[in-house]
Amino acid sequence: MSTPAQIAANQANSQHSTGPKTEEGKAASSLNNFRHGLAGVQFSVLPGECEEEYDTLVAGLKAEHQPATITECILVEKLAQHFWLSQRAQRYADISLDNEKQFSLFLRYQTTNDRAFHKCLDQLLKLRAEKRKAEIGFESQKRQEAEAAAKQELNQAKARLVNAKAADQEFETELRSYIEAPLPGNVQIPFDELKGVLKYALTEVARNQQNPERKRGVAA
Image: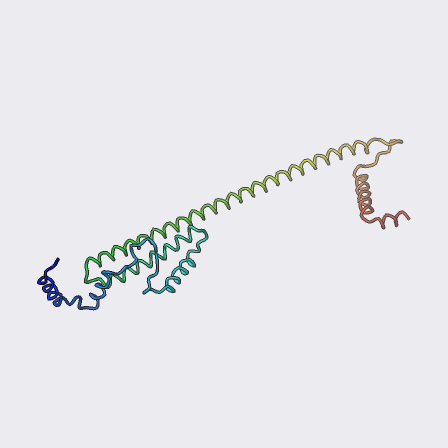
């Protein structure tokens, strides 16, 4: 235990200590027992800071980067937090110029959060680039598939046309062989003339089927 003489001496010495005299020194001294919120795991806006200003920062970053996934939203939130902490460390460093130890500490916090900010930004941009690359690849694949399907349909249409022409030619050849055969009395009807008659007759049949009233009128 301290003796009465030691207690008296300590009290006398304390009278000679006036503490920091400048405003900057007083502010730096006040940080000795102040929880600056720079080393904690949980981020929070301190009572002396503006919550609305932080919300505006987050809203601005979201408007700029347009996060579309949970991961992107987390990275944007981290961007806001690291920027906010960097600015906080800068303010504390400014009022700690008379205290080299505290000044160096806050400067390190600022540097750490600046690096973390750029790391998050790089991760976000890389993620968005990979996502866009995947979207382009998917779009390219769909376009290739559509082109292949269109090409296949075109080939099938060409094949149907060739088959139809071949069938028509075969039918015409067979029909010609019957029509151009000599009739009794050695009379022959030119195929091209008979072909026109047949075409007209088929057209009339189709019209009558579509319009029964016309068919009854012709019959009458």
